[in-house]
Structure formats: structure tokens, C-alpha cells
Length: 191
Length: 191
Image 1 (cartoon, chains in turn red, brown):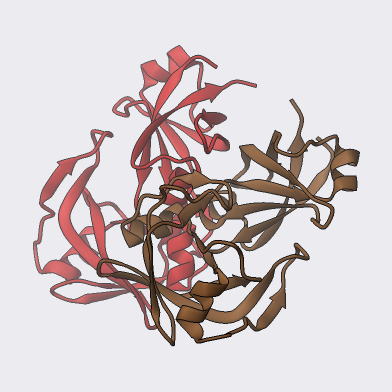
Image 2: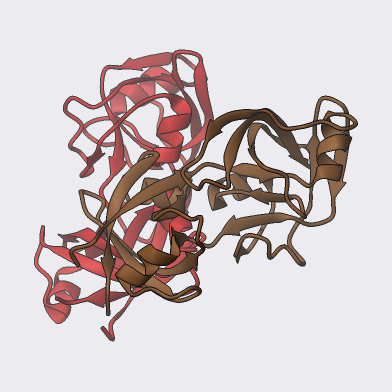
């Protein structure tokens, strides 16, 4: 229980396919990079969208680039309750049968049939970091967060890739429950 | 790890002093009981209030009766961030030095100097239940919640009183982080 692991809290955000990006922002549109994120493959884009379910709207949702194969909306359960949808807890990319939503952009709207998930809490690590920590891709670990709202998160999915960087990703409900605002740290708990 | 404990998620709510109740609803006003809560001493009132900090408002906040010595607003950290206040995690009643808020009722407003807290996660139990579970008032335990969002909540404060009924109270961030919507159950973890 001695290995400290950085933790980042992911606020609600959107990944867009190229075709949805163009439907929302215009033909041949390209996302503008606002900020590089910790994972070298991801950046926060300057662009934001509104999402709507019936008469409920969440404005100013950040887009995370680059574009992906499929559009996906990642909410916290608090967001989902406010919006009136009941997504399940899924791995990124696993959107089959999830709720849809209307995306509202400056150049148009997209009526998504599916794509809203609550992301499974997970830990990114590079191949060498995984080896050093004796973690295998797709395995499940626990992370202890100390402090006044001390918590152990179980069912933390391990995601290993050469270009990843060691970091646990929680959503805002999980971060708030553990007293973490944006960034924090935890400890790998081995059984 | 075999004792099942009921869990309830407390949404944001307000406890009012008699003088604040009268300032907000009118002279000699009495709260109307909407629903008895699990703890025999508490009820959800029919009445709701808005709370305001600068230009940010949360509407429709439920009042929990009966009236208390001091007015207190219990928020989740998500609520607090949305409202733009930074309360600390406190035991109910411990409001010294906490942020204030403007309460807006049908008959008037009250500018509270302090009173906004995030409640410490806690477990209520009757004296005989505490004895059976070998729990002492004010001690600290851990509660495991199973399921896809499996979590162990540490620093759960034990509150023993003759008229309490066995139940863990979490806020909405904690409930959502554990995949609990309103009610669930957990297991007492003994060290």
C-alpha cells in the first residue's frame, strides 16, 4: 500500500465522430486544441456543446479531442439524473443500447440514438509502469484515497497502452465523494 | 463482514430554526409533515425554499423538520460547486465558521451568516442495535457497498441514540459514486 497514484477527476464531456463534428460545426470543421490532457492522446477542445433530452438541457459541455470512430457522452450520475436519462456504467466505446441525446451545435443539431454512458472508473498506465506495478491490462484493482472523506474505490479497471501515463480517472460524483476537487492522489491496494 | 446495513441517500435539504421559519413563512408558522423519515425524530416537510449565493440559486430545497436550535443547509459537494460556496465536511450542528447563504421563502428572506455544511457520512443506530453490533457512539467504522461501483466508505461516524434506527446516511455524491439511488445496503467492515 505504498505506491502513490495520481488521480484526475473527469467532468462531463463529449467525444465526437468526424461526421457529427461537421454536422454540428460545419463542413470540414477541425477541433481547436485548448489544452493538452495528461493522456498524450487526448486534448480539451475549445469547442463546447449543449445536450438536450426532452425539455432538459446541459449547456457548455466540453468536447475532448481528437475525433473518434463514434460519438460518446460521458456524464456523472448526478448529471444523468438532472437530465432525466438512466445510462449504465460502461467502458469507453461500449455504447450499444445506451440512451441517446440531442447534440446542439452552432451549425446544426444531431439526434443521437445512443452514446450516453457513465464511465467505469479506471487507471491508465504505460506498459512499463504496468510492469513495475505488476498490473495487467483489463484486470481490476482497488484505490484508497485518504483524508476526511476516506474511500476505497474497488472495481478500478486497468488500461495499459504504450502511450498512456499513470493516472486514475474518476467522475465528479466519485471525486466529490472522496473529497477530491479536480486532482488528488491515491494508493494502490493489493489484495 | 456479514452484517447488512440499510443505506439511505440524503438529498440536499434545510433544517430551520423557529425564528427563521417565521421570517420565511410568516408569524407562528408551523411546518406541515409530508412524510415521516426513517429516523423517528425527522420528517420531510411540505415546504421548500430557494437558496441564493450572489447570482446563483438552487430552487425547491426540501425542509426537514422539526425545527432545530439553529438553521443548517446540507449540500453535496456537487451542489456547493454549482452554488459557488466551499463548505467543509462537518457533523450536523457544527456550523461555526461555515459559509452563509440567502434563504428565500414566500413571506421573506433570511441572510444567514453561516450554516452551509457537507454532512459527514454517518450511521444511526439505536442503543440496543449498537450493542449488538459492538459499536460505540462517536466511533468510526467502514461500510462496503457491493456492485458495479463497489466502494468502501471509511470514516463513517457512529451516532447512537435510543430513538435512532439502524441506517447509514450518505449524500448524493456518495450514493451516486457507489451506484445507489435513494436506498441501498452495505456491509459493516470490522478492522
